[in-house]
Image (cartoon, rainbow, N blue to C red; front, side):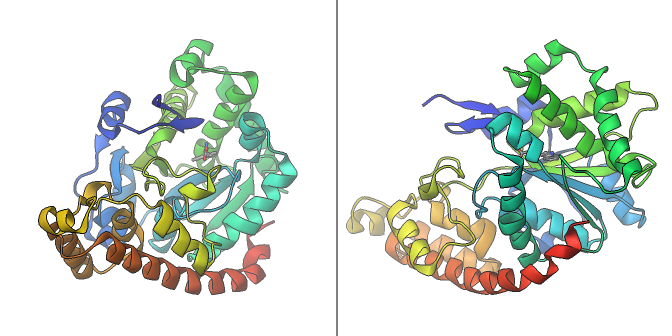
Length: 367
Ligand code: TRP
């Protein structure tokens, strides 16, 4: 399989170290201790950053900061999407103002999905899941790229920024960063830069630092936005960003919305979870029980273990025990899968209840 990592598409396996080196992202080392409350930080799914100091300083001195993210509502919301959601909800609880863009124009230009379908999926699937995961309507600006705001001054400021940014980017730059570029993708890229930068405009929050937590494949968008943001007068406060690696898909490759056997959706039933884990979750176990008992399992490639580690087993001691037992061969693949199925299903049972009661809050997020 060919390896291809662009912000539009990820194919094959991803060489994270190479990405970090090539993209010039710094490894994420020491973080203030509050970050340890969130297992994605504690267990190091978030691996890199640019300019995170600005955000840490704002947090320390209790100054305002914004966390900005965008979602492309082209498929079912799955456990891979939870990684970004949990990060921005974590920041909201720490006092950040959130900006969440539904990238419906990007979905239209890059994937050919209608604005109506994007709107429906963004609300019925993404937003309901965000609310069930703990997103609060307070300090949250949830908007559609195609319909920024009912407030004309705000809407103009956002689309004006996209247009003004255009002068400060060159065609070759787009080509170098994206490889392949069309007018629609170019506009999407500029609109995404406007997504990240517009919170700093006087019509919005004024001069505040903005953090954009993304999957490592989205860095090209950030490089463009960061470069352009310093060429325009007056320059913006440079964007901060963090980078997480991906939760593997069931088969071990990327979790992809277009392949239901690669993901667990937050709307999956108990039975579906059980089937998917049993049938598709790539195992680091050995071929025979005898070998497994002798040699132990390989945790690095075991998908069930990754799900427990990054999402579903919050208790460090329990995780450690599972790790030791699997590595020593005491725990079999079948048993590890049973633990994983139970953990996921317990989570989903609660989550799906919360998701239903989230419906009555949806209106509070839409203006
Ligand atoms: N390009 C992102 C995606 O494919 C969506 C997006 C749009 C976004 N605007 C953004 C992400 C701003 C982060 C920040 O999912």
